[in-house]
Length: 182
Image (cartoon, rainbow, N blue to C red):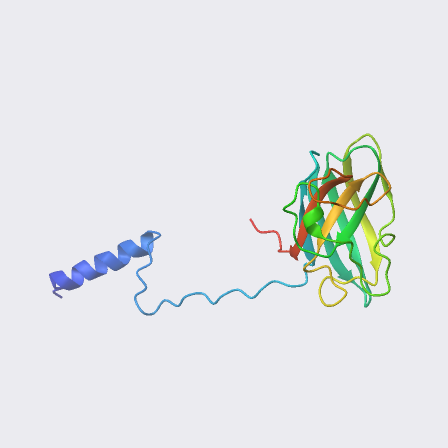
């Protein structure tokens, strides 16, 4: 059997392409469909330090049951003593003192100032805990999606004013949480 030089060249190109990372899209290869937006992993806020603190971490909210959620808190470099976590109206943490996050926010019928009680930390400067939030969801009218979270040093939630230092030490904006991938 004789093979023409043109056919031999084409076979060589195809076989080499199969051994390399190059994809020539020869007509039979389909593009992968776009992945749907992942849901069910809750909402997550990556915390960044504000007001000169060194606090960092994550806060994730996951739906539990029909009318409540769990808030998973993981933070480092938190000063010892009391601290507060509060949900805020705007998804914005661009200001150095949390002012851009706007006023406190809570679902209808809930008090934003007392919804999450005062928490305490010992001298280890690390927080890893779960808080149950009644009446809160991840999305929808009672959802944290489209809001931010601010962490305050001390037992009080202090109002923010532009360019005025306050007790806010970290801020994060809630976004759809993604599964871990390697």
